[in-house]
Image (cartoon, rainbow, N blue to C red; front, side):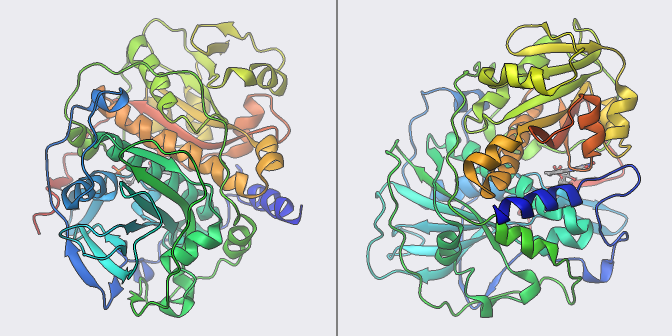
Length: 505
Ligand SMILES: Cc1cc2nc3c(=O)[nH]c(=O)nc-3n(C[C@H](O)[C@H](O)[C@H](O)COP(=O)(O)O)c2cc1C
């Protein structure tokens, strides 16, 4: 109960309000800008391959893709199209890297660790390694003397977050963004695994065990301000396996030391409080039962993944109803996100009246959503889980709620991800709070890719006025809370920014 109180206090305290945004530095302290690339000094670096042939995107969602063998080439492809660099951008003398996984402010808090059996080209022992995206290489943290007790067609991937990277810019609200980013990273891995015909499942493992597996609890290896918090453990395998208890190997004291990311730091003590409260056994939620429609034939998965970019401005044009419905439906590929519904501002979708809609992704919540929202809403049924709540022009409201960002009004539509909040905390405890952000982030990554495959663009919106949105929906309790916002439309490209190929350096 103590942990739930901590969650509720953190959630309330980090809401953006019209009169007061969540606490942050309020300016960009460029002298302490964190390095987005973690490296472990003293490790052997194994370069990965840069293969470019991936199957057509639409085939990722069927059953027909044969599984690629587990080898150096497939692990290389997996990591490149999940968490690798997608492009370098340059403008006015500065240069920055963008990655396959979207990240709030491009601050990239997520780190990735791989537990793999002996693989030719990597090691003739099982290894624990860290992925270095800038080099597209594995840093070997440990080689095990005995075989791993996992299936031999399987690797495990752990994700963790370095809160400092996000705290630098976003202060106290940053813990939320780190969790959303972890959800994006998870879905990016899942999609890249699907391109290899592999299964990717989240395991129900305790945070402490994940931290131990990656050596994150060996605190002497890290600057105390730059610790990593374990997020989740994934099983990637060539075939389906029963979810069973997993026997993780003991990791001895490691010699390598994490690089220093910033010369000095600002303290945000609440981050440790919320992090400690939300550790625990990762929950396995009920899967969605609705199925997604297979997308039409498309470009290669790799091309879509590398082309995915956040729009910084939208052109205010319309999209078709078919595109709109495909986008909503694509979110159903994220099966483990049954606690999330959408409340949408539809601005310009041909054939649909402008207005406030809801997309009920899990039909068993229909009645509870109706009860939670304004009782005067129409709930006009538009089929496939889509309901019109009230007709009207919501462009101004969308912009205002998204911290005055114009992309929310200039997209064809924007929306908030309404999460079954109170019940998730009751069922799963404090870690349920973290899991809801992971669900939202996963949906975000999926929708970015689907938008790209349809020739459209998207942008995740972490900056929104929480309770203004809830009030507009007539929601005044914690049954549902919106944890992530999003906009989709057609981007205006800023031609002053140059794009360079990744991995030419
Ligand atoms: C959780 C999250 C929150 C974000 N919030 C915003 C936002 O409020 N406004 C915005 O313009 N972009 C936002 N973005 C987009 C990021 O700035 C963008 O992903 C990042 O700059 C990397 O660019 P890319 O997506 O093109 O790779 C957000 C992205 C994520 C993943």
